[in-house]
Amino acid sequence: MIPGARLHAYLTGFMASGKSTLGADSAALLSIPFVDLDNVVEERSGRTIPDLFAEGEQAFRAIETAALQYVLSELDSPTLIALGGGTWLQQENAALLPKQRVVFLDAPFDLLSQRILTSNRPLGRDVQSLRQLYDLRLPIYRSAGHTLSIGASESRASLAMRLSELVKNCFAQSV
Picture 1: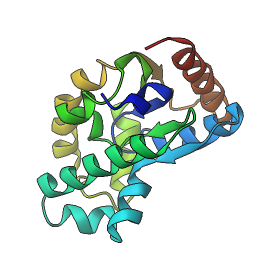
Picture 2: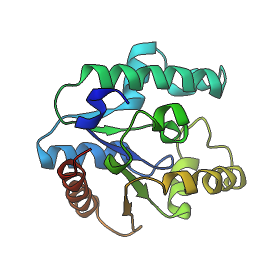
Picture 3: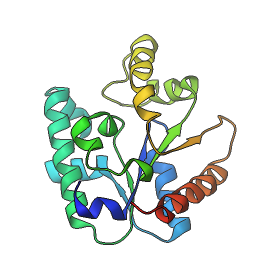
Picture 4: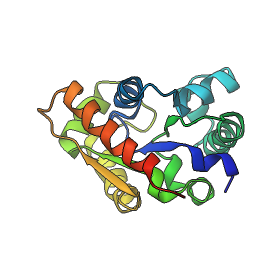
């Protein structure tokens, strides 16, 4: 584990679960910095996530891991970090992060698929393939130290408030 990893809290979850949006909102409520790993990947590579994925998921995951290592080595104050949808699934990445500082954003599959199929996401092909991917990833997401259950009708402000409380709990735990 990179020593700096102990300073931060992390968000994981399936595509379109709200990691970027709720993460930014919660960090603002807590007055702490927020980093979206997908943005770091794009900034450091000079390419979009879909462009990187076009070269293969394995190549993308290597770039993503390098970006995570970079972020962890550069940040020196407590920060909320939104991981990519597959970041926590990679053993190499999970080994870098203290599990009790990871929050799983658990949104219903129907809500996720609706969001994904109306966006430009590299793994968002059709409902059946999304369902298979979701079912495969769910047990790993559930290994996170904390879970925020997301209701389809709950307001963004309410979700951000609940997430900020969970993140506070993450920071309160020693690692």
